[in-house]
Every structure is written in C-alpha cells, then in structure tokens.
Picture 1 (cartoon, rainbow, N blue to C red):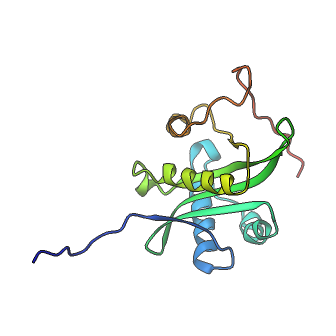
Picture 2 (cartoon, rainbow, N blue to C red; picture 1 turned 120 degrees about the horizontal axis):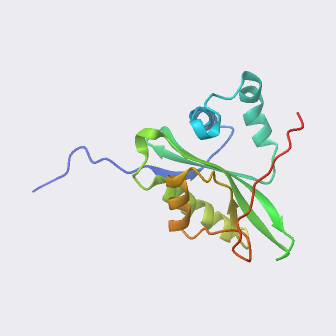
Picture 3 (spheres, rainbow, N blue to C red; picture 1 turned 60 degrees about the vertical axis):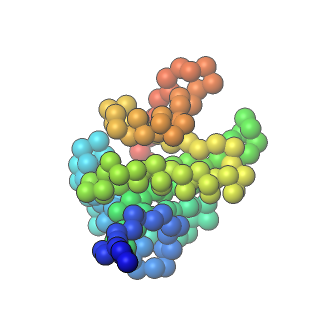
Length: 167
C-alpha cells in the first residue's frame, strides 16, 4: 500500500483576526516588507505608524483584512475598505494594499487573495472592487487585468490617483 509522506499543503487564505498576535504581527511584517519596495517608498513604516496601525485598523468598521498563511507563517496580505459608489448607489470594496512575500511570488497567492476579496465583496452586496496600482508595477497590473480589473473610467480614459498630504 502506497502512502504519501511530507505532504505539503498550499497556503490558505483567511480573514485576519486583529486580536490574534500571529495575525497582527503578520500584517505588520508584510506591510513593512511591502513599504520597503522601491515603488512604495523603499523604507519601512516609521515607529509611530507601526504602533498605531493595528489599533487603527481595528477601529475601522469598514475594514476587511485577509492573510495567506503557509502553516502559521503569514505570507500574503490584502487590506480592504468598504466604500460607496454614488453612481450605482451601492457599496464597493477597495483593495488598499495587496502584497505577497517575495519568497512566495509567482505561486498564485495574489490571485487567491483577490478571489477571497471578491467573495467577501459579493457577500456584502458590493457592486465592484476598486484599487490603484503604480503604472510601473507591471507584474501587479498583469495580475489585476488577468482577474478582470480594467480602467475605472467609463470612457476608457486614463485616470490619475492624486493625493494631498495633510499630516
């Protein structure tokens, strides 16, 4: 009789529990790794932001947080916030941050995270998912297009994401 040894399960996607130390530490670690990437500024979150992040996320009733776990190791993250589409008069879900640990990229975890986000959006009655992506982030753009994202403008024109720093 044949049997399998050392069966390795693929990472699983869960909704994060911010009260769980493993989950909130994973969110901090992954977000710091993401912030250190050149397109995100190339440096980790400052100490004040790190200290405020988890309590701040926990205070957001509109937040939805997803982790990809390899066993107990957080290896992927999606941070999302509910919004509202005025033109559709329905809720929407914005993917604010999406990242996969560099050692796990190319294995479909970004696709799996986005599928979990989409399932939650459907469950919540959202009319659409939104996100912004740097034009230079070719790999992310390919992922988003592959799973059905397109230009947000009804006319197909390019849109610009603009910010004004207040604090």
